[in-house]
Each structure stands twice: as structure tokens, then as C-alpha cells.
Amino acid sequence: MFKDGILKSQRILVTGGGTGLGKEMAAKFLELGAEVFICGRRKSVCDATAFELADKTGGQVTSYGVDIRNPAAVDEMIEDIFRSGPLTGLVNNAAGNFISRTEDLSPKGFDAVANIVMHGTFYVTHAVGKRWIAGKHKGSVVSIIVTWVFNAGPYVVPSAMSKAAIATMTRSLAVEWGRYGIRLNAIAPGVFPTEGAGKRLRPGEEPGARTKAVNPMGRVGDMSELQNLATFLLAPGCEWLNGETITVDGAQHLVSGGGFYDLREWGDEEWRTARDAIRAVNNQDRKARGP
Image (cartoon, one colour):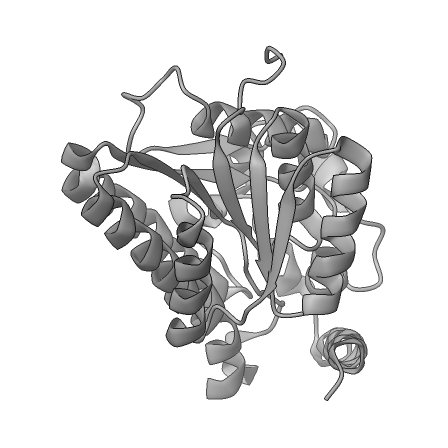
């Protein structure tokens, strides 16, 4: 789809780049010639991903262990990156999410999502954007949001609220920063099955099974489709595209909202089972991160 080296001379940061969608997008950028930076809370995971991707593509990838909920840590990372030259692109991919009846949510549970998705995304965008403006550099930001920003997100209210904030940030800063040559766009992906998301959003189910049953195209997304769209938004050649959210979900949000409305059928027992499964996944992640 793209000519070889279309991202040569591009320097792109992918948050949440150690696993899942972030890792897949980073791999594509490297393949097309970009220098890539990835960050995530688990430094060991990001280091392993950086080694794997560099070995596979021959590209240059640098990893950071950073909790984007910490604005000081974010600013330190961005300052370190800019010492060797400005970024040209930022992909806001880091996120957190889990299903829950909203009446069962604790403030801590809400903040666990909102602090990463809304606050963390702003901290990174702000740290990069102010350096672009000060240095008179052009730049492109791509934020990964959700189709629920167009309708409703029952049972994932913290994510729906936070992603809606990112959609609004995208439009607002596209207007405010457009005069500097800084573009902001967003992608609202449908289901591109990843291990982490599946365990917290559809515990106990085959990833993508429900999507295949209701999607107009009868399937889930192929990772290359997301990679190609992200590349298009970051590559030179369409610099008047600004302030837009592009949905890539096989038109599912037009017929089902693309959310979790079907979970209204669950009773206390089903929710208890889901909570136990999600806690088990979270405990595994905490052990993997270490003390």
C-alpha cells in the first residue's frame, strides 16, 4: 500500500507500545523507515518489544518505562527524546479498560481508567506539542479512541467518558495548533483482538466471537488495516486532514453501537464471574511488573 521508506526521517513515539495495538503499529512504522520510540509502565516488556522489533525490521527503536499518569515522568521522557531531535509524530495508544456495572464501580476503579486515558494522553500531547511550538516544528498526533464516543458506552463508562474527552481534545487542538503546522486526528477502531483487551472486556469468551456475529462484514479487523490507517495519518501527503476521527470497524457502530449493550442480559452471577476473571488478570499483571 505504501512505497518503501515512506516514513524515513520520521521519529514517532507510540505510548503503550510494548504490547497489543501499539506494538503492531510500531512494527509497521519501523518497517517503513521510521525511528520509533515506545513507552509503557512495564519497562521490561517495552525493552523486550524493542529488541524483538529492532531484530525483525533492522530499524531503530528506543524504549522507556514511564507511567504516563505522572506528568513529571512524561516531561522527562519527552525532553530526553528531543535531545537527539524533535519527534515528527505521536501515537496516543496507552489505555486501560474493563467491563463493570457502573453502580459497582469504586472511585479507584474509575480513576484507574480516567487517569491513564484522559490525563495521561493530555500530559503526553502537551509535553510534545509545546516543544513543537517552541521549536517551530510541524507534527502529527494520532490518538486511538473508541466508537462509543459517537453513541454510548454502557458498562465501560470510565472509558467512554475519557475517550470522548480525547476526541474533544483532538478537535480543539486541531483548531488551536493548526497554525503551527501541527495536526491532530483520531482513529476509532472496532475489534482488533488482542490478549489484554479480551481478558478484561470479554472474559471467558473467544476474542471477537460476538463481533463476527453482528458485524456487517462478518469478521473482526485485520491488524494490517489499523497499521495502514495510522501510517496514512502520520505520513506526508495529506497535511490538510486535521481534526478528524476515522472509524475502522466494518460499519459495526452503525448497527450496534459497537459497545456492550448486550451485557444488560447478565445477572449478579455473571458479573461476579467477570469480576473474578478480571481480578485474576490484574493480579498476574502486578506480579509481572514486580515490586
